Length: 96
Image (cartoon, rainbow, N blue to C red):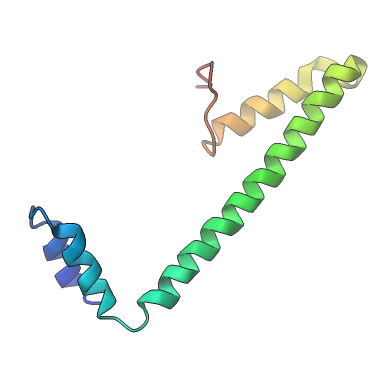
């Protein structure tokens, strides 16, 4: 992949820069395996996020069902820390 050509295309300000970028990337025989690697990494990250969310949701549910298991609000603290990691955002509150 010619990174200088890609940089020139992206910075050109031309209306059709996206198409020109795709044409430039298509010239590289390793572009498709590279893109497949990106998709694989995204899927792995999404899978990890789903597992982590499932764990936190399960903990929250357990804490609601059996409040004595949530001593000192540790579940809320874990959930707040998870939001602070920046992987997802809270829909209703600022977690800063």
